[in-house]
Image (cartoon, rainbow, N blue to C red; front, side, top):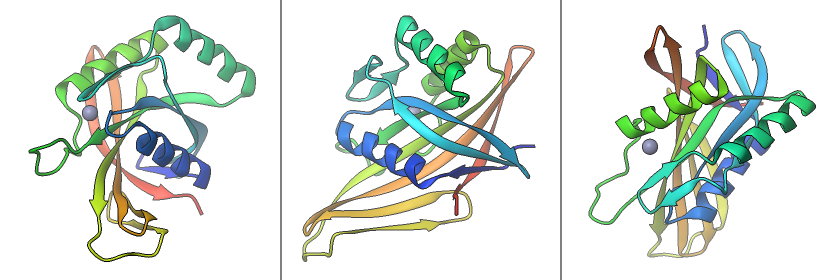
Length: 189
Ligand SMILES: [Zn+2]
C-alpha cells in the first residue's frame, strides 16, 4: 500500500518554481515518476500545464490535445504520469489557504483519471503564502518535514519570502467511487 511520496531535489524545486512563478494565480500541472519501493513512490519531475484554464481562484487541467502530446512523450521516455499538483494561494480576507482537496479539485482529478485511464492517482497541494519581513533576513531556503507535510520557508529577498506547505493525497477509484487518503510527503535523500 502506498504510504509515502518522496520528492527528489529537482522534483521539489520544480514545484516551488512553478507555484511562485504563477503567484498570485493558482497553477496546475502533472507529476511524473515511477519507482515504488516499501510503500514509497518517488516523484522525479513535475510539469506545469500552460494550457490549463487558470483563473485567480480556480484551476482546471489542460486541453485534450496537449495532454495527449505529453502522454506520448512520457511513453517514449519511460517515466509515467502518476498524478497532478496544484497550488492554493492565500486570497484577501482569507485566514489561511486550505490544505484539503475541494470538491471541485476532486471532480477535476476524477475527470483526469478517466481521461488517462488511471485508477491510482496522487495529487499534491502546494499551499503558498507570501511573507513580508519587518527586519531584513538572510536569503535562504529552509525545508523541514512535519509528520505528514513538507514545509519550506523561502527568503528570496531581505524583506520578502514565502511559506510553502506541500501535502499529498492518494485517490483510488473503484467501481465508480473514489477513496481518498493523505500520504506523507518526504524529501528523497
Ligand atoms: Zn485545490
